[in-house]
Image (spheres, helix red, strand yellow):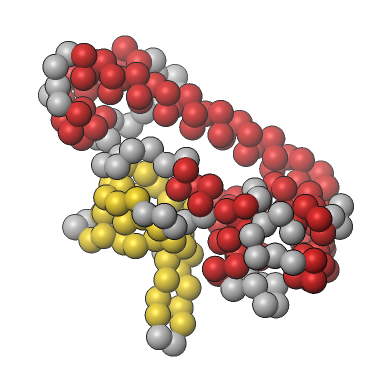
Amino acid sequence: MIGFIKGELAEIKENYIVLETGNIGYEINLPTSAILDLPPRKSTIKLYTYLHVKEDALSLYGFLSKDDLEMFKLLITVNGIGPKGALGMLSGITADEIRFAVLAEDTKAITKAPGIGPKTASKIILELKDKFKLESAFEQKLMNQSEKLNSQSLYGKREEAIQALLALGYSSSDAYKIISQIEITEDMDTEEILKLCLKRL
């Protein structure tokens, strides 16, 4: 129903965030690993989302990558694993680790995730092993690694531009506000980002 939400990171809590877009603050549950990877408050981020509907509640779950969202959707199809359990798993181990553990029928690797015992791990392997192919798992792992490197380098450039704006005497709130309005791409260097910021200021 809601494929993704792009907005300003308004609040960061222990296991959820508030993402503001169109004057609405969406409370979105995130894996702990994703919360640790978030940029500072007031940054613009995009989250791939899953809306879980229960009789008495609507809950939004968010992920920094499409792959994590797809893994979450697969995990909740396993009998006895609800959205909270799937989120807990993705907080403890990555989507790649889950895929390779299922293919190798490695229950030990899956029990590294919080709240997952050997019985549940065996059930996950049994119900998901036909969903993965080794070749596709390797391809996905390479894609995830390159995506992570790109996001880290973009984050580094962003931070350098913010530091430069602070050195020029702008307040941190102005610096973060203006940088969140700039669409930073891989081929841009810090100088270009800074020029775009200064034009807007």
